[in-house]
Image (tube, rainbow, N blue to C red; front, side, top):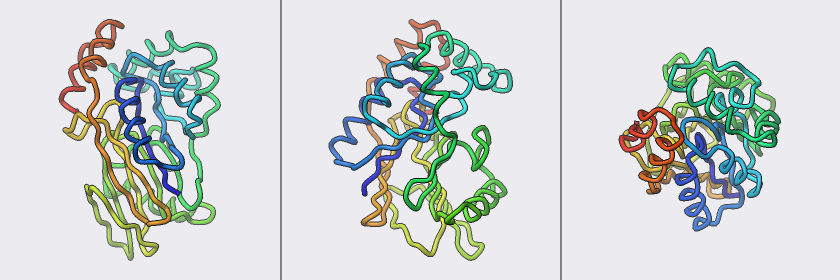
Length: 244
């Protein structure tokens, strides 16, 4: 199977459409989303509708859980809180119901999908401690999947772990080996934070045992125009150009 793995769309319709067009060209078998369909950008309902129409398998992100009312936005930063409150006002009842129905984690074949950290949607994977903790949790899961795909940081990265040796890579492609365990982030579709403003995603080929990362240009100006027109903070528009 060839899986396209996307994350952190954040209501950026222009980026999402550009990514889906490239995914169509790559002829994958299935698209999987690691959460945060909503937040920061101006088209939450439209992005949810595409997820539903295209039967994209999706888990819940921290913005999704707050936008649909499952959790309070009080414990996020001020910029995220403003975006969540705006999004909550825009979402249709059907969109909120869909977000509330999403699982927080999911096993697909021999790999595992989660948003932030394993068993914690809000936590980030940044430090060596975070990595060792999540590799241990990955191993403890039923069936002991050897790959975990995660989002939340908006930065593409591949971590591998073997015999207590941790490696960090920012590859264009990587061959998967059963001897290693992996934690892999495809980067963000709708708000990259790695200094590259292009939308980011990856393709995981289970037959060829490889992961390939992809970037795609999109109409940033239009996404920015919509943010300003919607009355969302101007900083959310500005950061799209910087990729940060």
